[in-house]
Amino acid sequence: DAGVIQSPRHEVTEMGQEVTLRCKPISGHNSLFWYRQTMMRGLELLIYFNNNVPIDDSGMPEDRFSAKMPNASFSTLKIQPSEPRDSAVYFCASSLGKGLLGNTIYFGEGSWLTVV
Amino acid sequence: DAKTTQPTSMDCAEGRAANLPCNHSTISGNEYVYWYRQIHSQGPQYIIHGLKNNETNEMASLIITEDRKSSTLILPHATLRDTAVYYCIVRGTGTASKLTFGTGTRLQVTL
Image (cartoon, rainbow over all chains, first blue to last red):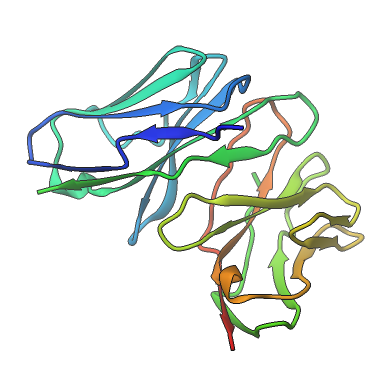
């Protein structure tokens, strides 16, 4: 089975440019998560969706960051304009919500972003 | 979600059992204990989870104390490929409950 698929795997961009990261969750999963990982701050949850609806975006650092989930099989994380401090690995993850049962979250391999 | 406390780092000889402890003294009754690991430059990988009973799968065993305030992840025969950062996470049961990572334990498996 295909896991969570992220693209691009690596991106180098200049400060001020728009960056769009893409994610395809595991088929059938109804929760999607965006995380960011840096050496200084570790793994941080940015936003998560349930049934395509944003549930909690309190981790989104500022207005330059936006995330969308137009359908159950696709999500984007956009940074506009990008800054060097946005350099990080961005992980997308998905899970199948089952109410009272513990539900496992599966991660993609990440998108490595470098803003110069 | 309850907070967890883990040692910063541990060493283990290859072929021996690696026992990784985790304290979660504020866990509530409907919260699960999850373990993930992250091998350098890869995405976090699910290992195992449990509520109150001990659990075992092909990767590891999870031992949860009776009062549920702590747990231990056991890798029965550690290999060099098990070198990674191991995260113990307590998570609620809501359909969209979050997975909040701490700093984890860096396990170094040596020859």
